[in-house]
Image (cartoon, rainbow, N blue to C red; front, side, top):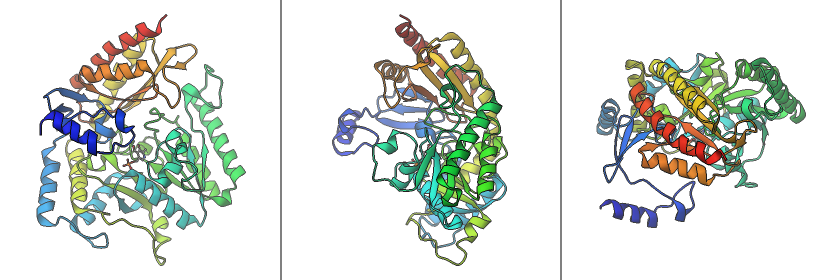
Length: 446
Ligand code: PLP
C-alpha cells in the first residue's frame, strides 16, 4: 500500500480514539529511530512527545528488540497464573529501582488498569471505599480510571463512572485555586494551604470512609504541575494520620522522566501503592504494573484477590521491560536525563525571556510545559479550559510542518522528548519552537 491508500483505509475503517472520526489527522508513520520518526513520504519529525509520553528510551533500540525476539523464540506466552523466568526477573529488576518498601508487583496491560487495580487493592486492604484524587489530573480512560481523573475527560462520561471518588485541588502556583492571581506565595505557604485544604476534605468526607488518596506525583497532561517541596511528604503524613493508603500514579512521571527513576524519589516519599506503565517497556510493548508494600499484599494472603487479566505478565512485554531497565542502567539514562534536563530548563528560560506569549515555563528533568497566554499580566490563557484556539492549532500545525512533533493540551504546550535526546537535538527542537512562537507573539500583541 502506498501512503494515500494507508491513510484512506485507516480513515475509513479504523476508529480513532480521543478524536471525532471525521476530524482525525493521522501522520502515516513508517519508521522510527532514536529521537526521530519518518512518515511514508520520508519526512523526518523530531519526536518532542515521545510518541504518547512513553518512548522514553527512544525508538528502534536493538537491545530491547533482541530481548523480545529471544523471548518470542523461547516462550511467547504463558498464562497469568504461571511462574516464568521473565516474571521472576522483572520483579528483581523493579526491586532495584522502586522506592524501598515496595516489594510486590501486580502486572497489567497499561496505566488505566494499573490504577483500577490500585483502587481495588486499597479498598481491600483498608476495608474502606472512597478514593480522593486531584482536579487537573488524568488517570486513564476506563470507567474506574476516568472516575479518578480530574478533568473533562471524566465529566463527559458522567454519571456512568465508578462511584466513590471525591476530588480535591492540588498545588498549582500559576493558577492557584486558593490564592489571588499574581499574589506572591512562598513554597511553604503553598504547601501549607493545599495540605490544609486536603485535610479539610478528609475531615468533611470522614477519614473512616476513605481508602486511598490517588494522585500523580508530578501532574502530566494537565500541565506538568510540580508540587512544592514538602507537599508530597505532607500528603504522606495525612495518609498516615488517618490510615489512608497513599497511591502515587507514576505512569507518566516514572522511568526517568523527571531525572529520577520515579518522581516521588525527589522528595523521598514512599507510597503504599505505586502505579506505572508507559516508560516501563520504553513503549516497545504494552505493560503496566502496580507496586505495593508487603502489608497491602498481605491483605490477600488468605482471601482471593478478585481481579486479573488474560495477558497479565505477557512474557514478551516483560522481556521488553527487563531489557529497557537494563539498558537504562547500562547507559545511565536517568542521570543523563537529569543532566540534559538542565539544558532543557535553560532553553525554556530563554524562550520565556523572549516571548511575551509565554505566561510560565516549568520543567523537572525532561518533563516540561509552556503555558501560553494572551496577556502576561492578566494570565488570560491563549485557549480556554477544555478548549483549543485557532492560534494554538496553527502553532501545532506549523511545528509539525517544520518537522517537530509536539502535543498541546488546551493552552499548554507539553515538551516531553525521549530521555536519550542529546543537547544538540534538544536545541534543534527549541529553535523550531522559538520561531513558531514569534508568530504567536505578533498575533497576540495588538
Ligand atoms: N496515568 C497517567 C498519569 C497517564 O498520563 C496516563 C496516560 O496518559 C494513564 C494513567 C493511563 O495510561 P494508559 O493510557 O496506559 O491506560
